[in-house]
Amino acid sequence: MNFTSIILLSNGYLDKYIKRTQLGIAFIYHRNNDGNESKETSFYMDRKKFENYDEFIEKFNKPKESHKLTTDDCYTPDDVYNIVLDWVINTYNLPNDTKIIRPFYPGGNYKEFDYPADCVVVDNPPFSILANIRKWYMKQGIKYFLFCPTLTSLYKKHEDCLVITERKITYTNGALVNTSFVTNLEDKNAIVTAPDLSLLLKQAKSQEVKSSKRIEKKYPKNVVSLATLGSLVRRGQSVTIPKNACCTIREIEAEKRAGLESFGRKLLVADNVAEDIDKKLKLPTINTEEYVLELSEVEKAIIKTLRKGNNGTRSL
Image (tube, rainbow, N blue to C red; front, side, top):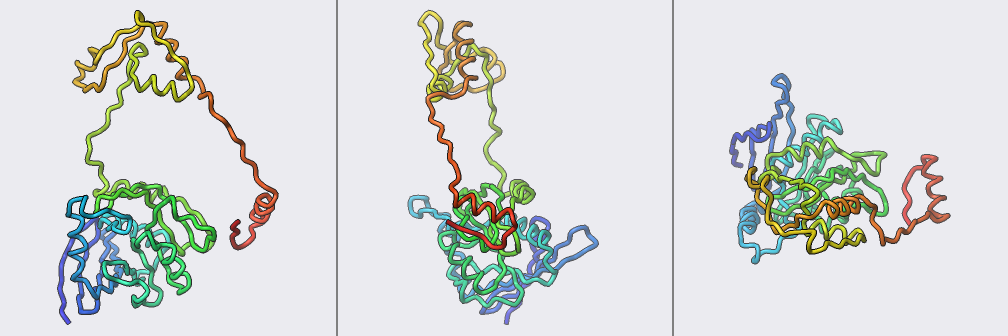
């Protein structure tokens, strides 16, 4: 049995010891919150084929044409995972000796993992088999808090809880996924919104937007772009601009002075044309069909049972 000790400082977490054997790796995180209190959380990762991990990461460095990215390849940035873990521990008041499990790794099988008693799985599973994973954990009585795609994780039966963060996360492979979470740590709730977790994830260093700040220019009414005219078409509004009421320009003097880049040509239009366009931009969209949907008697009956606080959930 070999012991390797390393020290890594990452996002307020001190990864102090790594105990590595042929059967797995155990992590012990010492979490210093305010300098006076030190919490210890154990991590167990059954990595029988840990040597395959480098190959798993290496494929993300290959040209895009040689590897089609999928949501199953979304390896989680360390700071994102640490933020989620910290939020889970604090939100659900997990005891200090709770064993946090990460069974999803290259070459692993979550069903064959040796789950300690009273453990909690906090991990990013393959999204393509997420439904099966949730059902299996519920059947086995294993607690979990899992990453999931926001728009496809609401199922007919609310056996667990969807924690909505509506946060687009950039994963290590470059994939951008609108991410939320599913958990059975919530006893009574089917849906929970977590704006605090969403904000924390937004502030993660790995999620910083690398592009420069976008500048939105607001032109005078007499400057009309083709994009503006296109929006009028989509709104169902007709506009006619006479030849003697407009001239084509590339930019206005204010753009030059401010050193702002201008894309595409625009029109400088007469006052009466500018006023006409401005009024039509403020009008409601026309030529659209509004279809008012109503509840059926069956759906109304279900709502009445929900108002009574009836236990369980229904699906049609």
